[in-house]
Image (cartoon, rainbow, N blue to C red; front, side, top):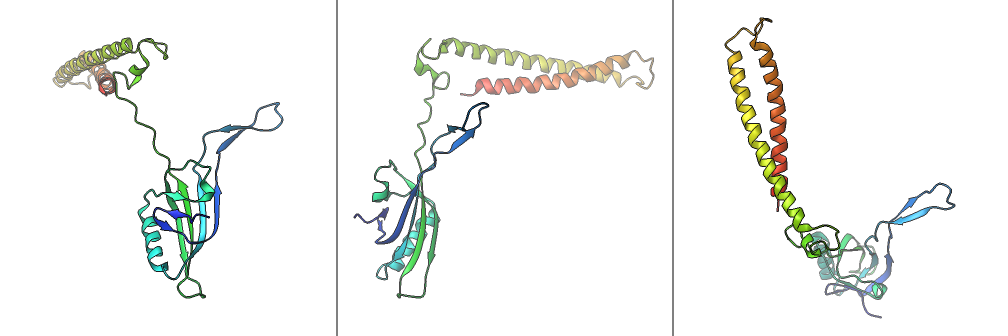
Length: 223
């Protein structure tokens, strides 16, 4: 029987190895259906639990290696018969414990929990529309990605026009508010006061328009 290994460290005195997999089902109760529908969200990481002892001849150095790997939290390779049927490239040491009992001199008991660490999927290819050009014009997506790019360019252009208009409105409002300072606004008969109140509302609306324009422009300009 091959000796279980973590990277290049042999675990020669393993006493127990347990492997677990969690399919992570979500229960969905359907009216009128006897039983419960189980919806699979995706398999959870394979986990391996190991317990054993470190033999006196190499206990100190082996313990140091295990503690170093556990503290680093980096991916490791694990080989053992119990994972033969599983496709696992890398794992991480999710938990590690060591105990030194009264008994045979130099023996150290340990327990390790390993969790599968799958590789991330490849990043999306950068293209004219986030990599969707790979589907071809009018291909599987059901629309012309080139035409969609033109629409986005048009949105960016209109956003720039709206931003310029908002700046002009803000300048006009500042001029109107400057005029109102020349009159007594407490006088209800002051003909400038209604204009001042309207200018205040326009200024608030212009500020919101400016914020929306900046957001639209920034979104459309993202690669």
